[in-house]
Length: 339
Image (cartoon, rainbow, N blue to C red; front, side, top):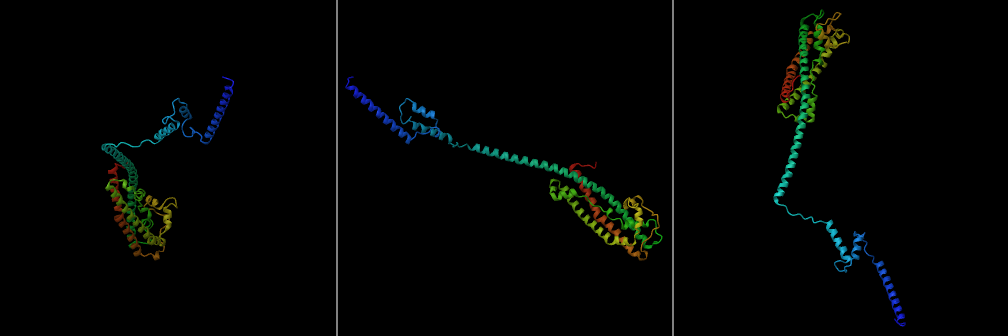
């Protein structure tokens, strides 16, 4: 190279360097104004973008960074939004699925019904057992009360016959025992049913647990006779309070009964049952004897005796029958025994 060409080459290199510098400045400004996409922000790894930019293949519409970026986004959208279209099933499969659902619901219903039946059957047996014990105990109690009522009826019959024409001054040894039975003995001869289980069955609706119609009818009959019996007991109490107590208050010698009770050590009924012909240590008398009317005393005793008989025939006998029928139905249904 000649000396003249060297300054020209240097000037050409300088101009090329200046142009290269200006090109780099303009490129930097363009990048500042339009920054490249952030691979991490757009969900595309930087390594993939770098790989696309570093390839030796020429950039075309198919492998340019923008086209590659859009392709990745399209693949992601397909991944997150799968095709939900299902092929239509044959009609036989729909029928089979429906049949299986129906069978499952039906079996569940039958299983629940069976469980309820087992539970109700168990509860019914427990209630029946308690009811049997209650009714059987009442049957024994009723027999005891009936024996006491028979004794009172006999004593009332003796009293009314005695006051009709016997001596009221020299009293018979049996007189005060009959006086006591006729006008003092009241509540102890009354039968009061223990119907706690019956009331529970009625109020709680548990009567439906018993499937036997005959057993249900027996329980209903028992409830009716118990109601009638309670009303009759109330009538007897009213009669005793209104007529028998005032009669005793005026004519009865309470000192005799005090000795009968051993001055409070035993009850009057226990004393008379132990000593039916109890004799007091002192002479006995009728108080206010001058006001004592034989006819009135006889009528009162007779009225009371007839009330006792009617109660036994009209109210106690039906209870005994209903009690017996209910016990038989319980034995028949659940094989209970008196042991």
